[in-house]
Image (cartoon, rainbow over all chains, first blue to last red; front, side, top):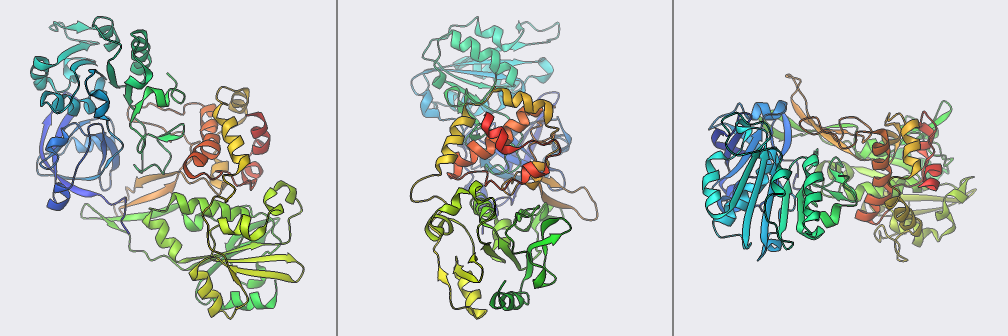
Length: 272
Length: 320
């Protein structure tokens, strides 16, 4: 019988410092059959772990289009395991289970203006959507990206920002920037008030719970429907398959029924 | 218990470790059988549950060797769970569904024989509405068991098999006079349990009700109810840090414990006692019925008995 808890080994192709506390790991499965058959959707996650150190859920931040060659995880150093993972370098191996979760239903974006709102390290799962949009694989009408984080030091995917801004509209706002920062200062919700958002827009939000509270309020103000507000939630998880109960929200499991939910479906179970 | 069964169980003990309810001081506890004569056939509810035999409080999943997870080779002992009452069989039927894809549960289950038992009706049978139904069709068809012994009245008894394994063991044990019952799934032909649907509806709209604020002041979040509940199956996966014995284990979890919903960075969804106890009730009365169309509470009353501050589940349900 298949053991759903058995992990597979991946090799770190490269480990680059993405921000002061986050590393970008580019990974590939050692077993060529597994590597060939590893397919995922934007918004899905894997359980990454090291025997003896445990496992934790991390969203995949590369495009599904590259899945047969590599996939990427941005790991923020925040606990014992992530600290250990970030001490590894190219050639080292880690364990993976997954992919898990539903991912984004990109059909919902077809022909509509798409707004991505990311806060802090919550920005990570939005990257595959941006890459796919720029490559013409996402059929949304337009793409606006709002990204809020603490400072220049913690900003993610800096190298990509210029390219993203060419075909999409990217706005970054920093809460506590250095004196050299020329851009916006404040919270991501401050940006919402400054841009034009049509009522037909589909908004995808990923960030801390406090961000959801203010962003949803603002989007409702802009007349977005509950079915067009999409969230990706972060919860404690152990099994990844909807059994252990840690990630339950109302009748759903974030690991299995989520992490992506329409606001319409979870607003009764999620306290803002 | 009659002689035929005693002889059968004695023969069974040559192949299986027997576990059964037994008098243990003032209470009935499920424990290993040393003498068949010690088995309690009174039908009283045991204090502890059967779940530890199917889902151990701590089990090794993997050995860690050279940085790799190697599935634990420990072979599962052959265990016979004897005298499992109808209420506890309901709980095991639920576990069977929840862990249907779990190799550890399934390997253990392959080596476990479940022998259900009902004595003549319990004194407080009115609490258990199921006893007024047709026994074979309304009850036994919807429960997981290998063998079932029904004691209808003094001296009169009927034996059923519920699986091929059960049939085989009965035949080998010299018992030919039995009837086979094919498991027809956990849900009755008449549809899902009406009481379950009613409670689900009440629970779904109960958030913010006064009862949860009342419980916030009373409940001490000790988790005894979840440990003693036959259907509580939350678990944690954990790596042992013992350098001599590195392993990945699965341990019982409890939604009452502080780290249950803790995420990296310190955030916690269940940050009040009220939220924890609501989560517990919601799992039993909404989430399990939603997922499995089965009640998440089998009505054994263990949680009420063990609660150190006297929270009674039946009283809480009246107020939701």
